[in-house]
Every structure is written in C-alpha cells, then in structure tokens.
Length: 354
Image 1 (spheres, rainbow, N blue to C red):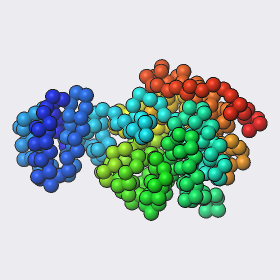
Image 2: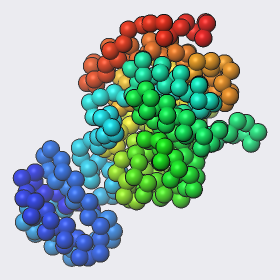
Image 3: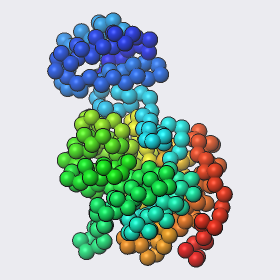
Image 4: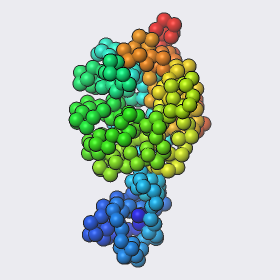
C-alpha cells in the first residue's frame, strides 16, 4: 500500500504519516518525486489504519499495490532511480557503457583492456574473478587475485569496476574491491545471495534468468531492495527460446516494459544476448534505441584465445571503440547523452592483427 501526498506537503506532515505507520509495526519508505511524495507501507495493512492515513493532513490518497513486488514498482517510486557512483550516474539521462573481458586472466591483460575501455570512452571496467560455468572442468576464474588485479586497473585508468559474485560468502570480499556487484543469470533466484546483497552497501547489477519472466526478475530485485539496498540495476541478457542460431534471444521489449513497471535502471547485455560477435554492435544500438540506460559489453584483445572460450561474443578493441563512437551519434536521438571525446588512434589496432 502507498500513501500519496502532494509535492508541497510539509516535511512535518510526512513525518507524522511515517510515525503512524511505524507505530503499527510496519516499515515506511519515503520517495520524493517531482509531482508528489509517496510513502510506501511494507507489511500487512489493516483497513482501520488505511482509513486513518486517508484522513491525515497532506494525504491525497491511499492506494493498494496489487503487485507482489512493492519497492521495485513504479507505483511506489514514480521517478526514475539514478545511481551515482564516483561521479558516474546510472539511470539518468546519461548512457553508461561497461566493457571488458568475460574473465580476468592476468594483471597485464586486465590493465591493457582497462586502458582500451577508457580510451574508447567507457566508464566501467567489467571482468569476472569467479566464473560460474556450465561444465565443471571449464575455467572457473582466478579468484580473489583477480579482484585485486581489476581494482588496481580500474583505479589506474579512472574506471569503475563491476564483477560477478556467486555466493553469499564472497559478497564481502567482492564488495571490498569492486564498485558494482553483478548477479548472473544462474543466480537470479539465489535468494540467500540476494538477501546478503541487500545489506552489502554496494550497487548491484541483477541479470535476468534465461527463463525468467519480468515479474520474477522484479521480485528478485525486491529481495535486494527489501534488505535495505536501493541501488539495483536490472539487466536484460537474453532468454532461452527454440532458436539455436544465437546463444540466447535478446528480448528488446524487456527494456521499455521494465521501465514501465519499475523505476530501476535497465542495462542491456548484447554479448550474452546473442553470443555472436557480429550481432553485438547492431543489438547494442537497438538496445539504446529501445531506451536502455546502459550497456555491458565483452571486449578482449585476443578473444579467439580467451581462457573462458566465450571469445566468439567478444568484440575486438577497434570494434568496441567504433561502436562507442557510433553511440555518441545515436544517444542524443533517444534523449541520452554520451560523449567519448576520443579520436581513432594506434590504441585500436585492426581486428585482423589483434
């Protein structure tokens, strides 16, 4: 249930509303929008309390939210959430690009790629230290050493960092080194992990499960939000369909749908969404045209020999740089700002020679 107050309602009256709610043993979450202030009630609301709130000063209406996810709902939080991390805003009018390898392989590798991401105009360095793999004999990542390598590369080149966390036990150590924690598709409904992320204090990128509905994704986000962490991003990374030409089917309709249902930023992953290098660029552009707040893209200096074997979906450095230059032209058309301020240089060798 939400209590709707006018935007000019005094702070004292909002506080009175909160005190009445908390006196009944419920949680109150205040959201200040451009046109109204919304106080969300978490818990079972008795009809008597709802009527009491409806009659309080400053209250315009009391509305029951039928959705199973409350805090993630746009009904509760009408304005877009903007997550600010060290000067980078995710979810506002700026387009954010996260780039880097599927996995951290060495200090030299991640340092070189970080320099290329920065030179191309990206704001976030991606890289996995722990890798959930379908097969138990596949490369599983270099672990904590990889976290340290990526943190050093990010600091050196002025980039934020994002890495995947797989278990509740590793949340604290990942949060110590990374700016953003990623939940992979296989862990979208790892509820113990989601609860832990609700208390970690770091922004979270939550990837949609490859067979998950929008409702299931938003309920997964609700676990993190309910734990006290408001900084959650939703990521569309493709779903499993009957088509096997591509690794997954990138659901572009998810971007505007999730933005209608929720206030949380929406990121698109065209690398995992297609699994084919030649499709990453057009689907990245299509994602921006559909309204995505950001992109997370795999880029590797030698993708055909990457340790994860996922090089077929990784861009070469010159392709990554070219894509970001095109996005600089596309972003303003859809109301986003994105400026690389870069010129082509020897930093980006041709993909043939990479």
